[in-house]
Image (cartoon, rainbow, N blue to C red; front, top):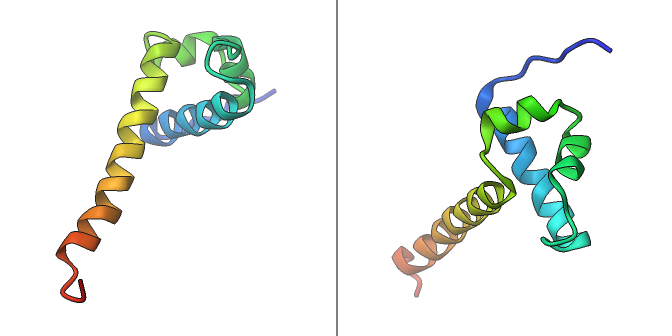
Length: 82
């Protein structure tokens, strides 16, 4: 299989998206690093290039979700219609 090279932020985002799906469906404890690697379709080395651990992926997922919620809430707070 040919190696697919992607931008670092795109690959990192793939891991976070896969983590969100797997954590919601299987639970955090039941999801392994290998599950994440298989979902993204990369090597274990690629995973560890972007994240030190499964916990680091969870932290990145929470950070991304917080930014999304802040954007929504920020728009509501600054809305002149409220």
